Structures are given as structure tokens and as C-alpha cells.
Image (cartoon, rainbow, N blue to C red; front, side, top):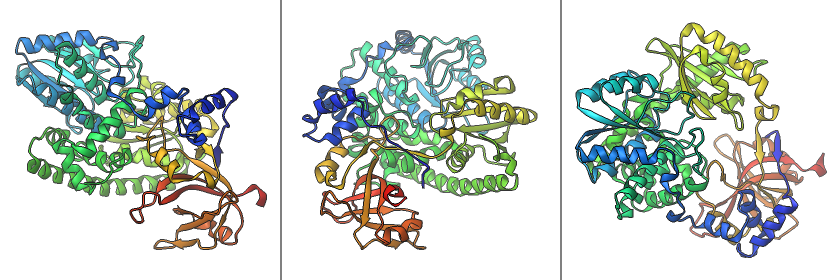
Length: 579
């Protein structure tokens, strides 16, 4: 059972907005309430939310330094300078490099791409890559999804006659690199309307500005790359609001209708062909495969795949990456088990503490971010997992909802060699001998800043409804809330005083799940539901005692009838009448 269910009834003002919008929503007050909770307050806003238009994208020149970036790129192309497109080895970085490279290649041939090796070069811009660029005669590097803290490296490149345009979305420091232009919506003083672009999203805005400045009217050429942006948005878990929602919406359409060759091969290997691909599919199936290239081998292979123009070649490359993902899964399972064993044998790591910091010099560098996520999910504490790489303790951290782990890591920066990231995920490196002091100061910061409710699982409820409200029309309207993700999570509903119809049963190999048929007093219709890993409630339910349930509303996969509805139970508790 999840310890806390959060439901805040609409305020008087919000109810007024909901009543005004109900007519736009076909008279459905439930849909109107969901819209208000997402910040939509007018019928016009509802129409924009349900039908995101490419025309709703912001003017790219609203981003600081955009004119400088475009002018430098135009100058490089006019002078036939060699250009390198450089990016991080994760999904966001590789999709960003693929997008910028593919688009510019339509107009310019003296261009190449580069992804650093996770093992040999590490995160961000490496001196090795700059030396390589100098040897190749590169005069301009467009760096994506990293670079905002590469002061030393960019100063070195400048001495070699290489300019940089930085396209990043990580939190900048007070002292910025000496780049020709820095495109980052989080820059101090920036008034750019959408603060939470992915790295690939920043790259898209750059290409949008380049097209606009050069009068390139073939918008389909640029919009055809939105499938890459959608993948980056999902994999990097950025809020799906504002223009991120627009790009994710149209990117998913592209992903489902005519994705690029590389993504098409991944879709085929994921067995998603002819299925309605969602953000969830990207997060759990497509993204991990692209990521596995940078984790297990080389991120260059992921870009090779994403820029491929031949379906057979793309499928062969995709099979290699699919194998990397299988290898990654095995390693992930092994290291997660080792991490849990380490904690079980050293209970002081978690007991009495509000954070977790663990270190094992033999763990694979490419997997520790996944392990940090697993620990955060299991113990509900901000977690840092460290291993040894190139003589430094290198790690990844993950946070719980609502807690800024970037600020926590930043509080220890005097102990760190390097760090960077977001509110919920930060990469870092430090000397091995500094780990104990880092652990102490990190815990000290977390303990003094985290709220008790952030250390326990909770469910945010969008609306309390009765079974009479659950209709095919409601399901159809809920589908229009896609794409789901941070800032627009799949709506969670609560219904109280629900009873077993008398036909619910335990299912699963070890009878760990409950297949439910439920009713309430609002309607004679029986509602199907599934509750995974909740067998402990079966005796209470089977005794026909009332329960309260939290759930999402799904279309049942049984049969082809689109009206088939199934509730996906998120939590169960005995009704108050039983307490």
C-alpha cells in the first residue's frame, strides 16, 4: 500500500474555469477538471492543448545568442570550413547529433560528427576530441547536450583556432565557457518561454533558426526530424509541457507513420511495428536500446544508426545495438543485486540516513546511472552510485520527486573534479580519497533540505469519480491528453466504496496478481480491473468488503472493441467505513 494519497479539490476559481470549459469538453466535467489541473483555463487553451500545432512553437530567436550562433554557422558554410557536430553518448546527445548532422548535410558536405568514448574520454568535451578535430582541420564545433561547463577545454580549442557553439540544457555555472554562442534556455537572464528543452530540442531550435535565417521554406524537411526530438524528450524525462508537448506530439506521429531508417529498425526489433507507439514505449523499449550503445560500446554506433539512409544497413546496425541492450540488462541485474547486497551487509549505509552513497571500483561505468535509479525507487532516497574510471571515482545520482539533487551535489563542489546535470540526475567525479567526506556532506545537505513527505511513496490523484463516469466517451477523451510524461502524467483517478462483483480471482504464476470485476452504487455496469502484485488484498475483497481504489483508465487489450475498458490499479485500501 502506498502511504499517502494526495487529492486537493478544485478551488472556487478553478471550478469556475472548469465550468466554463465543460461545454468545450462535450459537457464532461471530469475532462474539464483534468485540464484545469494542467493549467488550462480557457476553451481556447483546451483546443490548443488537444491539438498542438507546429505554429505554436516559439520563435527560436527568442533564445539568447541565437543570432550569434546562426551567423557563425552561416560564416563557416560560406567559407567552406570543416564543421564537427559533437554530442554526449546518451540518447539525448546521440539524437541531437543525428538531427543537426542530418539537417545540415542537406545543404553542406564538409561536416562530420563525433561522440566521445564513455570509458576513454568521459562525459562532455574531451581534450582528445579537440586534438582530433584540429588534426582534421575543423574550425567550428557545434556541441550538443554538453559543454556548458567545459571552460578549460573550450579555451584550449580556441588557442588551436577552433570555435564552439554550445547547445546545452544543463544548469550553467557563474563562469561560462568562451564560446561564440551559448544556446541554453536555462542561461541567467534568459526569457525564453520554454525552460525545459531537451538537448536535442535545443539543437532543433538552432536548426529552426538556421532555416528561418536562410529562407529555407521546406518545413517538412525540418519537421521530419521531430521523431528524434520526441525520443530525446521521452528518454531524458523532460517535462512534456509548452513546446515540448508540441514537439513530442508531432514527433510521435512521425514515429508511428514514417520514422527515420534507424528508428524504424529499432521499432522492428522492439516488435512495435504496426502498434501505436507511446512515450512509455520510447522510455522502456526504444530509448534503452539507443542508450545501450553508449553504455556498452560506443555512442558513435547509435549516431551511425540514426543517420543511416539504407533500411537493410540500419537493421543490421540495429541488431548489434539490440545485443548491447541484452548485455546491458544482464549487467544491470548483476550490479543491482551487488548494490543491494552491499547495503544489506552494511545497514549503516541507509539506516538513520536520508540519502544513499555507495562505491565499488569494479562496477561498469555505463550501468551505474541505472543502478542509482533502482536504489532511489527501492529505498525512496536520493542515491549516488560510484565506480572507478581513469583514476577517479565517477558516479551518477538520481533523486526523488520534488528534491533538487543538483543543489545537493553542488554543495560539495569543492570536493569534486567535475559535475553537471539536472534537478533529478547529476553526473560527478572526484578523487577516491574524498568519497567519505563527500558522503558526509551530501547526507548533511539532504537531511537539512529534504521534506519528510519526499521520502515516502505517494500518489497524486487527479479526480475522484464514480464508476458511472467511466464511459467509452471518457476513454476517448483521455486519449487526447497524450503524450503523457512529466508535467502531464497519465490521469490517476480514485473511486471509493467499491465492491467485488463476486468473480474476482488471483492470477499469475504464483497467484501474485488480482483480476478484478468491480461495482459501485452509481451504476449497474461491472468494471474490469487488474491489480499487479496486490494479492494481499484478495481475502478482504473476496469477502465483499468495500475498498477504495486508485487507478488509470486503459483500453483493454482483449478483443478489438475500442469500448473495452480496464482499470489499471495503482493502489488499494479498505474503505473508511471498514476502519
